[in-house]
Amino acid sequence: MKTWRRTPKWRQNNPTDSDMSTTITCKMPHPGQLEVLKSPARFKVLACGRRWGKSQLGLISILKAAHLEHKRCWWVVPKYRTADEEIWGELVSVVKHLRGVAISKSKRRIELPKGGVIAIRSAHNPDNLRGAGLDFVVLDEAARMPAHTWHDVIRPMLADTRGGALFLSTPNGRNWFWERHRAGLDPLQEEWATFDFTTAQSCLVDPAELESIRQNTAQHIWQTEYEAVFSDDRGQVFRGLTDAAAPAPYDGPQPGHSYVAGVDWGRSRDYTAIAVLDASNNKMVALERFNQVGWELQRDRLSSIARKWRPQVIWAEANSIGEPNIDALVRQGLPMRRFYTSAKSKAPLIESLALAIEQNDITLLDDPVLLGELADYKFDRLANGGYRYGAPSGSHDDTVIAAALAWHGAQHSSRMRIDFA
Ligand SMILES: Nc1ncnc2c1ncn2[C@@H]1O[C@H](COP(=O)(O)OP(=O)(O)OP(=O)(O)O)[C@@H](O)[C@H]1O
Ligand SMILES: [Mg+2]
Image (cartoon, rainbow, N blue to C red; front, side):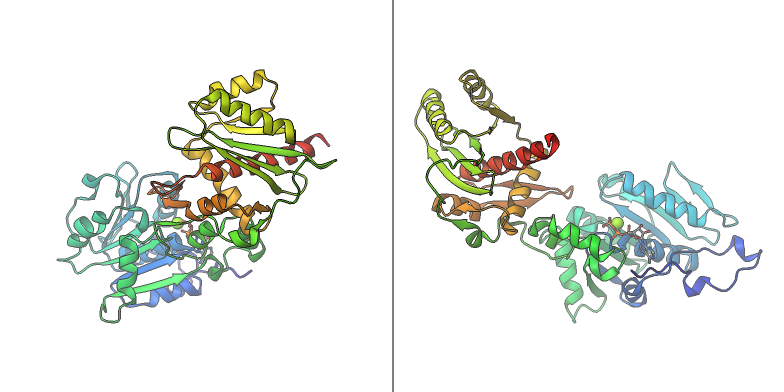
C-alpha cells in the first residue's frame, strides 16, 4: 500500500531555526489530492468515497490559502461533532508553533501572523454563518448541509471578494450538492470543476480491508459511501431478487433441520405475515399472510404454523400491539422473541437481509407478493448520513419485515450455536 507522508515540496526546503516559526508542515498530498490542488477552478466539487482523504485535502487547501495567501477562510461543517474536534486539533497542531499566531478555542478561530484567518463554522446554526469578508471556504461533508447554506449564505459572501470554495463530500442523493457537481461537469461553467474518486483510488485504505468491507456491506450503501455514486433519494434496497428466489424446497419439516420464524403484525389495513426459514440451509420454506379480524384468530393461525414447523425461535415485532400478542403466545408455550422496532434497530435489520439476498446467502420463496414488496421497498437518505427504510405510501411491507425477522432469527440462532459449541 502506498502512502504519502513526506512534506510537500513547498515546505521541504530544510527549514532553519528562524524559519521554524514561519513554516508549516502538512502530509504530502496523494496523486488525487494533488490533481485537485493544481486545478485553477474557483469552485471545486469533490464527490469521493469514505476515507479518500477529503478532509486532509481541505486542510492542506485552507492552510495554503490562510497561511501562504493570507486569506480569510472558513471551514464549514454540517454540525459541530467529534469529527470537527479532530479537524480543529489538526489545524492547531500544524500552526501552533508559528510566531505571532493567535488561537481561540472558544471561537474556533485561528489568526495567522500575516493576516490570514481560519474559522470553523457550523451550517446547523445560520447565525453562526454571518460575518464580513470571506475569501475561501471549505464545505466539509457539503452534501449533508441544507441547500441554503451555500446558495443564500456563503455564495453571496464570496461575491465582493471573488472568493473560492472547495466542496468535499460523499454523495447524499440527488440534492443541491449533486447540482453543483453537475455544474463542474458543464464546460460552459468555467469557474466550476468536478472531481470524482472512489475510496479505492486514494490507496489510503488497504485493498484487502476494502474488499472485506464490500463483502459485508449492502450494495446501495457500498455504492454511495465507497464508490461515491449519486443515486435517487429514494432508491431500491433489495437487489438480485430474481436470483435469490426459488420454489419451496419441501412442504413439511425435515429431520435434523432447525427452523426459525419472523412475524409482522397486521394493523388496520395491513396483513399479518409469517415467514419460516430453514436455519440449516437458509432457505425460506413457508410464508403465510392473513388479515382476519381479531387477534385471537391471528394467534391461532400462528400457533398452527408453529405446531407444523416447530421453530426454535419466533421473532416478532414487540411494539404496540405486538407486546400483548407475544405475551399471550408465550403463555401458550411458543418460543417468542421480541424485536423492538426503531429507526436505529430497523436499519441493520433491513440492511442485513439486503446483503444476504445480494450475496445469495438466503433463498427466498418465489412468492409474487414477497418479491413485489421487496422490489418496492425503498430507502431515504437522512441528513445525518443514516438511512430510513420503508414501503412507498400505499404499499405493504408485511412480508418484508417477516422475512427480515426470520433472517435475523437465523443469524441469531447460528451465533447461539457457536457460542455454546
Ligand atoms: N496524503 C495523505 N498522506 C497520508 N495520510 C493521509 C493523506 N490524506 C489523508 N490521510 C489520512 O487518511 C485518513 C483519512 O483521511 P481523511 O479524514 O482526510 O479522509 P476523509 O475522506 O475525509 O474521510 P471521511 O469519509 O471519514 O470523512 C486520515 O487518517 C488522514 O490523516
Ligand atoms: Mg472527512
